[in-house]
Length: 282
Length: 200
Image (cartoon, rainbow over all chains, first blue to last red; front, top):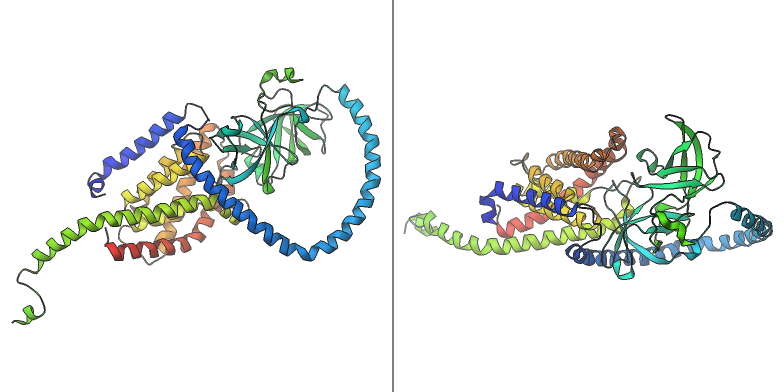
């Protein structure tokens, strides 16, 4: 230590050079985490998984205790709801038959059930405020690779941005800069859906480059389009909140994602990698 | 016996005493370094693990405090630039390893932060909270700004004002609030270590 103190300047410059060297060395774009990084990651993600499990155990117990008072009341309310829903269900069955016919007319197949999926738990979140990425508890050992799409209850949640041996880092949809090629389900209008710092505080996404003549309207569902080179087509992104006009002859739409990002705990990873030739998947 | 001899003072009070101290300090400095490295490694690791899992719950309006930064700055304040730089290096490296795309960005920024944070307040009354508060405030602003420049500005996101108001300023405020508690803790730990092993 005293040796280092004697040569302070050189030591500091050495640390900075080491950091720059690391940047140069890892900046060449391969997001699969190498052996050194993976082993360090292995240790820390195991720690994170442990902490997460402990935390979840406690919050489940505490949640149960605080909810006991409400359970009786909820029970009554739910019985009433069931009745109302039965009526609704009958109506829906009629609509579903109609939907099947119409879907076949539109050139957009729903292949959710045909995709290979693996479930995963979220074990930690990025502590930085600039990114909302999170770590899931499966990695290369289960066949996860970079750019796989990640689903959560509701629809599309994000994509795998980095993968280690037994963990993977997922970048969510709301991230500033992450863009998805989207399409309005009803009208087929195409646009780019992305996160936006102005909106992410309100948990909304922005869909740009909509043609001025687009028939998209508030309430429409937006799904991933055929033109995405990463995401499988037909996955629900969210619903339109409002439409506005942006520069040039373009519209933009504000989208509320169908996934509730604030309460994510488990996700599904689609293990089929898609490129532009997805059309051959059927 | 003279009064001096009765009191235990020899003719050359300094020479033999300093020789004793010299021998003591070489033995002690190794165990001091070890204890210091051990204790603060545990602090760094636990901070990382907790801030990615349990402490996510303390986010206000989606803003997490940058606890690693507070710990780093408080430590650099109490010790010196080299130790601050080393601590910053490992903190940054840890965050980069797991959550970064290009390793080295956080590493470099935290190293420099640890180094420069020790510079301004070399001689000050360490029990006063003004220095750490000022330093944490300035450091958070500087660090988050540089982080924005490297990761966002250079990729074309030029909406700086919005980033300032939505992310940088709230993080700074939250950091300032937590600084008081964390500084107390680091100060207490550092005092215990310095009482046992002596100052720098």
